[in-house]
Length: 283
Ligand SMILES: Nc1nc2c(ncn2[C@@H]2O[C@H](COP(=O)(O)OP(=O)(O)O)[C@@H](O)[C@H]2O)c(=O)[nH]1
Ligand SMILES: [Mg+2]
Image 1 (cartoon, rainbow, N blue to C red):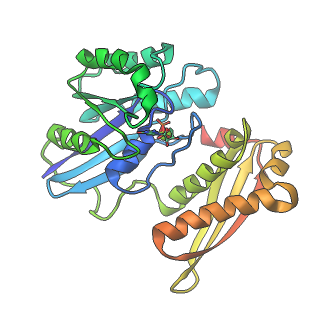
Image 2 (image 1 turned 180 degrees about the vertical axis):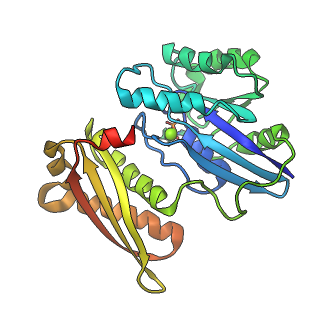
C-alpha cells in the first residue's frame, strides 16, 4: 500500500480548494470567488485500492502580508511544505503572472520534493490569455498538467501523479473518512462559505463561526446550534439584515447544502454575537 502527504499551494483564488474537493470527490474545503477564504490547513483524504493520500489545502499566498491574519496564513502555507512527500502548485492562466505569483514560486524553489505544476481553469476561454507564460514555468517542475478543477477534466492525471510519488506505508485514516476536520469544524466552514458568498466587502472577513451542538433529534432530524462572531458591533446588523432576512437566507442556504449532502433534515439555530477578540483567539 502507498501512503503519504501532499500539499497544494499557489496564490489566492487559483482553484486550490476546488481541486482538493474534486480529487476527494466530496466537499471538504469551502470555495468562493473571494480571496483568502481558506483559513485553516484543511486535509482531504483520498482512499483508493492502491493506497491513501492525505492532501493539504493551504491558504493562498497573498502579496500584502502585512496584517497579522495574512501573515499567519502565509506561515501556515510555508509550514505545510515541510514533511510532505510531494507538492502540487496550482496556477490560474486567466490572470497575468504578477509579483504574487513570483512570491509563490519562490516559496517552493528550494523545496526538495517532487513538484507538479497544475495549470487550472482550462475550461475558461480566458485561459488562452496567459497560458503560454505559465507553460514556460514547467522547467521548474518535475511534471505538469493542464486541468479544469471545476469540470474534473484531467484531474485523474493529478491523482495518478500523486500516487506515483507516495512511499509505501499504511493508511493514516479509516477508508470512509474524507477530511481531518471534525463535523463541528466542517459545518462551521460551510456556514463561513455562505457568509462569504452573501456578505459584501470586508464584512465576511470580520467573522468567525463556532458550532456548539450537532444533535440528532430523531432518525431524520438533526439539531444544529451555531454562533457567528463578528469583531465589531456595527457589522451585526449587516449580517442579520433587515427584519432578520439576511441571517434567514444564510441559514437557508446552509440547510439546503447540508440536506443535499447528508440526506437528513436540519433545524439550524444561528446566532450573531460581537466578540472583538476572536481574531486573537485564532492567532
Ligand atoms: N472556470 C473555472 N473556475 C474555477 C476552476 N477552479 C476553481 N474555479 C473558481 O475559482 C474560484 C476560486 O476557487 P477556490 O478553489 O476557492 O480557489 P483557492 O483560493 O485557490 O482555494 C471559485 O469561484 C471557483 O469556482 C476551474 O477549473 N474553472
Ligand atoms: Mg481555498
